[in-house]
Length: 195
Image (cartoon, rainbow, N blue to C red; front, side, top):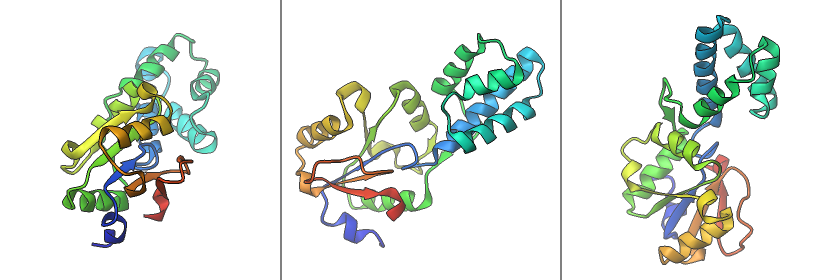
């Protein structure tokens, strides 16, 4: 029980999603693979070359403008941006998204202690829900309560709503995220890499 010092004094735990529970690149690279397969079928361009280009572009510069870069490199018609965007939102991934091992261990101990676990998710709710559904939760999915900040306001507003709605004390809530995302001094924050 290596996380008891974090769990015992707290009422509830709030987790971010991307690069907090799992590596975001695991989702993105599978979407690029599916897109490349689609383009190979439609345009007879080698899918492996597209995948390699997209992976390298993502790992170098991130996801921003990746369709535009790929379209320019392979002379793809602009109409394919619709397919790319739909895949980003609704892709059925070939492989499950796996949680970071220390995060999974921490979640299991929180669950065993009978304390609530909330996901506070930023970004497009359709895409984020798609990711959540394709994660390997190891039996923990039923114990999660999910909130989308896009539907309720800013991250802070949503966090305040969770505290109020679930009758929590701010000083007994721990937020686990990628980077400092809580300016409220009464709510404690833990960077996920500290797990």
